[in-house]
Image (spheres, rainbow, N blue to C red):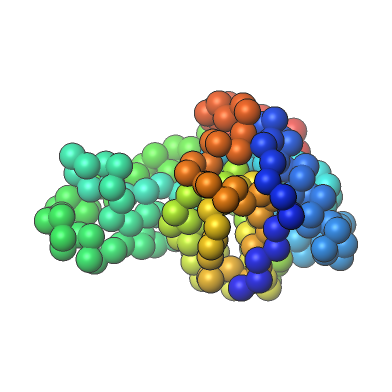
Length: 220
């Protein structure tokens, strides 16, 4: 894994601004990605899609959403025992399941609920269009930022199972020591020395809606 970052800390106006900065970093380092028919840009839904839209425009590449849902411990949903991503099998932390007494019935129920929401979102976003193929392609996987990186790791692992040429992770912001070893390369626009949350790097960090994601994918 190679990490590339801009030298300096900055605050973005919004996710579009972060996407334009990432596009600048990507095209400066990898001009061969522009107009390359092998490239596809995937934004982690929902917050990563507006960022990804700017990158897709700059690279002249197709844009799609990649949906991932955390699997929360019952009655402690903020604590994830795993995740399920678009087109992939659930990834589960056996240690968390064991430590917090999550039963097999609980696991099945949570997976079923989150799969249903994942499928609902994909249906809303694509309106019947099939997912963009990633096999034997260069995948630029985008989010507005990383906190723990757990969701991005699940996303990368899910895409890796579909045999892409390469996976480049592009994020607006993240903590020092950022590490997604499952990716071939990471591009991060800013890494605050006192990082405490993704939103600290944005003046406007309003929640992205399903309608906004759908509109971006429709107009791309």
